[in-house]
Length: 199
Length: 199
DNA sequence: TTCCATTATTGCCCTCAGTGCCAATATGGT
DNA sequence: ACCATATTGGCACTGAGGGCAATAATGGAA
Image (cartoon, rainbow over all chains, first blue to last red; front, side, top):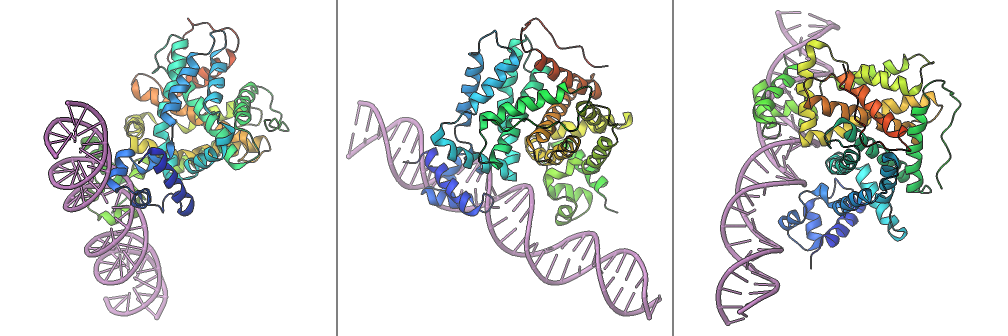
């Protein structure tokens, strides 16, 4: 039986072996034992293949945000939810790293990701808007959505480059780096350094 | 004589008339009186046509950052330079809005933009790294680069939706929104609203 | 002015992603 | 076994983009 999981697995193998750009949709289809045309019924585009359970995860992110207690500040609620969104089962860490490495190091996928990220940002923006009695289209919620994504991506990028780091730790570090940057309004102490690696 | 400016002008006209996706590279080439193959010598891809002087602007951004006095905080230096980068001559505002509307409302271009934005982020990150004696690849500078871009894009998005707003004003508002978000760590006052429109 | 060496322009052909359309095939219920 | 329905697959087409080689400018040097 043909499943998304099967196609994805085969595709990842080919991407690893040959690179994303050098792998044709036809090769994936052949390896999966289905027709090219059928593969396009499973995935709207080649770029969509490596995204796994992203849409489902988005729903969990929205849910997690809604379950945050009201006495936590919006900033903390967002930060905690972003960390929860990016929590991965220890057994799945290697596969997750593989996925993210592909997504973040392949220009075509990096570009395509922006479209997926739009939905992610919208989830954050909706929550922030709700908490402040605003529209999700207002400047403030949109800004926070974009910034939260920026922080998450910065953490991911670092995580992919250094096998030793922990993702939750890096996420905290990006939030801390931002605080540090903004708090540093007056005197600038050039000898200041980033805090140590998380966990 | 064929120039980038001419091709761009013709392309924009066709994009306005027919939409970006419905306009083929061949149509642009024909209208510009050059061969399809030649157009691809002027622009590496159709997606690159609407970007105008972006690369040159990047150099100006880097220069502006380097010219910031050392007694201004990094945060302010970045904020001011981002504003300077996005300053447009009043006479060119309409064309700029046209360009940005196309870039930000067309999915294909929205995706492609990420690749251009990578260079933008790198300029910011390099500056932040320099000021703090870090590597441009460190977490902190990269984070600030990503956040600065997030703020700029949030401002642009709003600017495109409301003809009345001023871009510098919106940029300040996004920076303010972020401050507000992060300062609001303890009590949350749901009746709080965004500050008034800039200028 | 003429010739030569670049450099720019173009044509041709190829690959590959993605889509529309319709035929064939499986599948589940009766 | 039979039919209605959903899935799969085949075919042909468009459009972006690249490799390559032929053909035009073009800007000096003689």
